Image 1: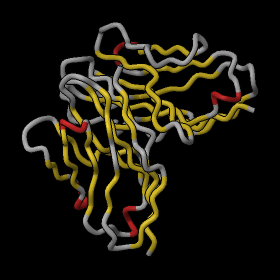
Image 2: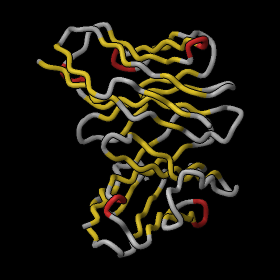
Image 3: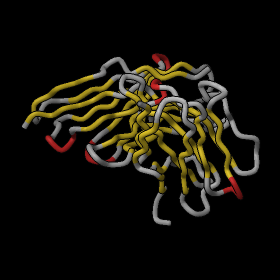
Length: 113
Length: 114
């Protein structure tokens, strides 16, 4: 596609429910990143996929968070047993072969009631 | 571990005023440095980047940034801001010898008054 696509754009869920957030990177981009954006916290790194290498999961805040990338393309970020503090905008970005720049999606606004 | 500090969280300026946003990073090795901008309702986009060479780099829309290695800083500047520069600005770092994991600062919200 022309850009990084994320779905849904908004998600409202109840505390304790599981949610899945989807990211479609730019076609051919080998690197994919997930970030969490919340007020006062800036962009918090969550996880990074590079080609077929093992993902860098060092930013996942707890074991309730997980992500996968199937076929080197689409990625899903899953949050289990959501908590109110999980409310934030979840951003996905992809990058081509060079280190030139990240291309960001428009994000998923997650609200946990 | 890498980290990025942006000390100015909110900045309010009048049009034509000069801008300087601070960015300091913590990392002992070689770094690549970036400034990203998020205009209201838009995606984050790259403003400028530094990889090597001339420490003064120029980006889009008249922005520039200076890499000062001894100060671990990469401050963003613009001589004369416009109302359209109202946005949130993020400094970021990664290591060319590492995994290309981008670490971002907490951002600076700039409001330019017309």
